[in-house]
Figure 1 (tube, one colour):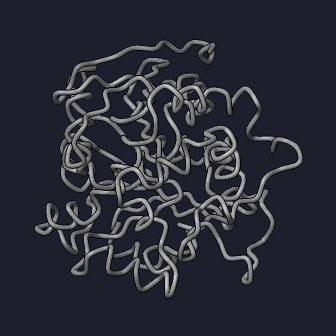
Figure 2: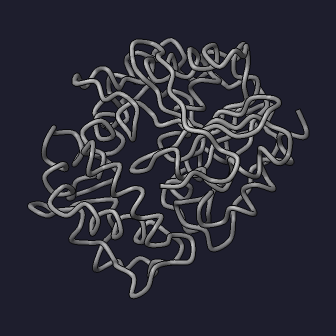
Length: 325
């Protein structure tokens, strides 16, 4: 796989793991954190744009993904360790502070990094998943309430080996279906068919996926090759173990329940993105939870893969935010 022009691939040993990252440019550090099921590659457009604008852009493979270490124990993927990875990587890069940007699971990782270590992360941007402070109620309890008679997808991911068996039977086909179904190009939700957000008793997530006749404009066969190659090498255990820590995170972050993030913040979501739509109340609460909010932007026609589906719009939002700091 060829790297984007001007980018280099490197690794650093931090917090007891090897973190792989791709870097471009020089200037103030911007740390880019991907979600599930992706890698540093989901930031391929932003690496170039940020570097050209005078920033040092670093997109990581989160532990459990790509060329980073994949620890064996589920608890090794708890939020506190992912925040520590980010803090230690900033040090390893020879910096004392950074702006952190996250998408999907990377958004809660970024939000929590800024919440816990505002001395290191001077500003934060989240894509797709809005910030909501740690709650008094376990997230698994809230998810069960959302799913009704079915199983919320995060619950479906809880048992080690269960989702892995579904996904790894045909990694390419599953990834294509997952990416397309969650995108702004997918057919509108059909109440009778249901969505991939919940799984019927005895069913699998793939039963509700849609598949494109042709590749969407934002995801080429070559792009899909990159993701498939990563997961064919390493499997999905590491990525899915992040979901298996949601209750542990709730316990770990008890002292921060109800706390606001006190650094400048940006949110970008899509009007066809499930987490953004489900997070409507969290977005309404931004004046309280993100008192230094720069902007909350909802992109028309955009699904879940925000920075890949609409890279120009995301680049513009990020650069405007960074320019305000």
